[in-house]
Length: 395
Image 1 (cartoon, rainbow, N blue to C red):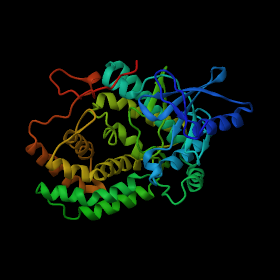
Image 2: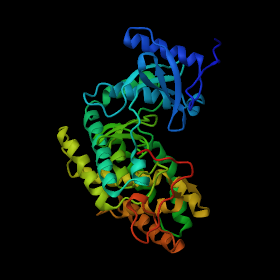
Image 3: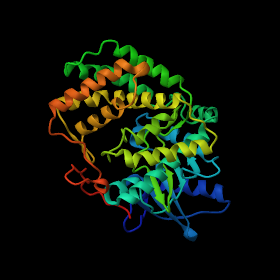
Image 4: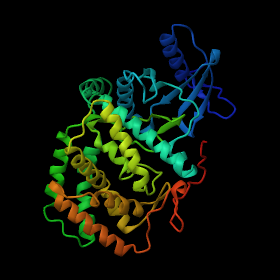
């Protein structure tokens, strides 16, 4: 069999290059101490780089290939390998167990989590009670991840240096804030909003977030479709954008909401509130005492997540475009509101004042625009998020 000759896939699945098959079989033989043979491969959730391997003796594992961005010099493969190796030490897992990796072949072998649903399935096709339960499970998984990783950040730093040399070990949101500052300020100017002193506050914001406490593993893309929920338990995957930093970046996803996700809509306070409480309870159970500085850090994270999207905001002023469940403009109304609605500006008072003025100008510019509800949470007469063509919910 030649290096590029594929192994026949399952009737519904792709073939697999022979080199990847041999690498997978060798890794698994090393893990299990006996020969392993791949029988078939099937694509998972339509993702061409993630396949389920059906092995002899009825065993199943997941193979994840190095993504296209990694082949062009990106950081995702090494970062995910470091994060998963790090998380293997958790007594109660919140991520798939890493079984093995071959950096030369560009593959990770992971525990198969089965066919469960995601939080996106709940939000787009579930009912209100299911959304509440699944969102709490999601928040508990994040809380467990963060509580365990705080105090162990040095271990992750070492693994990132080993598996992703030359790449920053910190969460990518910090660099995104720096890149987004100029276009964010340009958007304010385009709306006729004064921003005196705001650039200095944004610089202080980056310093504040860089030096903040509550430092642990930040997933960085904790989207509703990057989780697997079954029997009330949530597992989190896709750690390509993870890094060290203030875990408030992830926690703020419940409030923003979901600033890096295609499956965006409004998340009402009565739904988000119990999930936030469940997150805090998991931190407390892990021995993490959230002091008064925690709320300030969440406010800073919400500001940072907004500014990091500065270029998208500047583009949306000129032309709106679709992304997943809605267009870009409703997202910015929601993200601005999540930051401006926080009590007290503190060290970010000028930024909060500017963001409030921007929010008011956008409401005037887009008078008919409404932030949509998720289908599972839709109220009478509300705008409802679009379910993308071809998307198939999992029960």
